[in-house]
Length: 348
Image 1 (tube, rainbow, N blue to C red):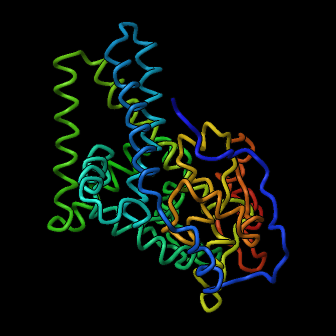
Image 2: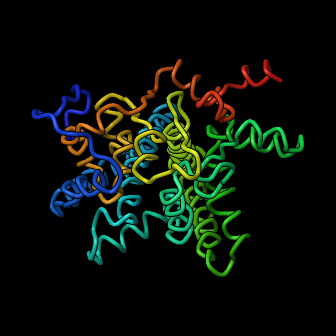
């Protein structure tokens, strides 16, 4: 039976005893008390996730009616999001350190999810080290330009910027961000280092061809394409909204700090207990950015145990929140906030 790690929807309460707010290195050190991994819990939750994933795939092949196959494929896609969090945390060193079996399994997970180790480590580690620090950067993140920077761009460059941040680009994340970015662009950029990206793409195509040959095109689509399209669309938007939300604050370069960026430039994504399960509690993203070595199943515990983490900028799956996040366009240092497309047009 599937279990939820924590009562994710319960209200977060402040610490019993008030203490002076911590910041900077002191706050990071305080978070280290939540780093300890329970290896038994990690394996139990991973095996639980693999059982649900396997059940969903079995249903895809078991059902004869395509609407039921699509439904099963969507379930697989949701579980893929959770499976990715195990891979993500393993590469951060939060899970399965010095566990050869788990490390080998996670390498296979990376191939299955089209995010091989060399590409993910290169881009995601850069993102963590430079969260909200480099305006205009597209390495491991969605670009953010200031009003002044946008004014200097050519129309073509501005169009590419808007395309990178467009909701349809995220919806098609399977093609745009994963096959196009994590696979294609990475291999073209550094073919010797990221040769595994090309191999992974070829394996992905080969598996689809074998499935279609043995079980038909509909089954192949529902077992591979539908889950990948859903999981990567969810992941693409989650990553966007975790760093592009109405309450976002960007520090000037000389004022930037690692802990400060975690608290003011990373959101808390509110969702139901079920969606917290499917997304591996990554909604507690500000906690994760403060200390990426905290296992995902301890993120809420860390937030509850540290008063400084209990007032983050928030967003959710509500339609109005999605629209508010997607409407953000440029950083205006004079207003100290992101301005929307409508505001930028009005001032122009």
